Length: 182
Image (cartoon, rainbow, N blue to C red; front, side, top):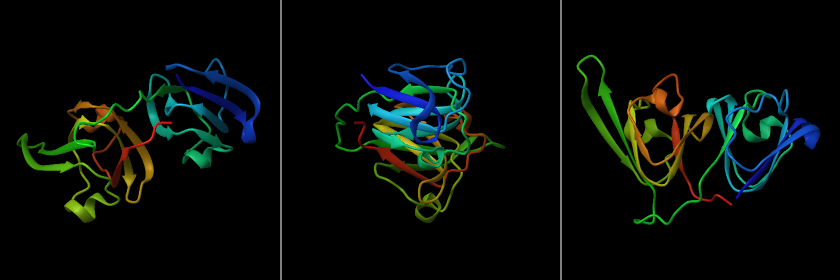
């Protein structure tokens, strides 16, 4: 069981809302979010209702202003608790990316990872990812190299298009496996 508290003002001031389960709509509880305290668990906060918009991975700790969680603004409208990480068979998470040629609709390149990658372009000479298959573990994709920019949280499963993980473009700069959820 996790617990997260959202505050309207910086440094944990103003109206607040405490959450211990997934919440698809939080607009009725506060108008803006300028600080967050994660008492337990690991959470993904979303800029828009129904788990859409910018995504932010939040581990246990204090975030006195939205820049501390790499926020683009003070808008949080939904949140989801990340389920506990189950032991992974290989000891590592595993993710496969597949690029498609949209003109001819056939696979072009298959990239498999089981470790963090701070610069996808440097390692694989590409930044465009058309689909993903998360076989084990949880992953955080980042828009830019070195884990910067917009974040996209992927659970185990198949993602046939970049829009399924919340991105408007197939461009990914880096990714890392979610290792600690406490």
